[in-house]
Image (cartoon, rainbow, N blue to C red; front, side, top):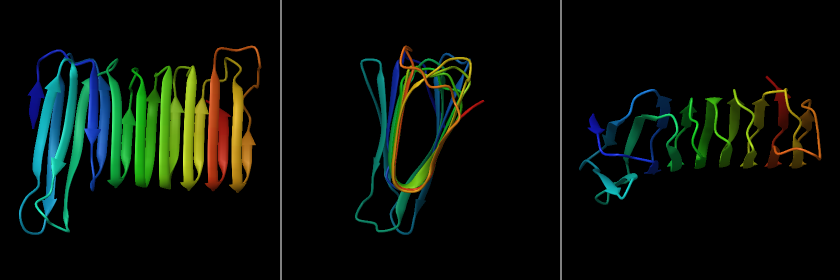
Length: 195
């Protein structure tokens, strides 16, 4: 585990195989815990601070079974961009702009306060709960359900699209609002409900 004490306004995690867990907290520094998994040679994990953007990534030395799981604690307002090939993504109590992509894995977001959030899982699903009404929330899956829970105190401009699956929306719709939600799944149900 290591701590980045320099000022960080954005965290980018370029994962491949393994889980990614990012939690917003009242701390002022970024703390990173890495769990390596491999069969032969260990992966080479790197962290680079470019300006105020911290990028976490790793490379595997020709190993078929090789990955890194990340558990990262960030100041709540930091923007977070996460991409992974295989493995679940868990985001908790974040208030900055959030972008998460998983090729195969479930994306779970809890107690979110982000004004702008985008989630995309090719095979898996998206489950996101917001404690503050998002201004722009986008969730996309190729295969997998989407479940969004947002404050019911405001209305939302809503766009939902499913090819195979049902779409259930119980939040208040409004065309005259600063809040928009877009959810799209080719194969899977969509639910947008008030918290």
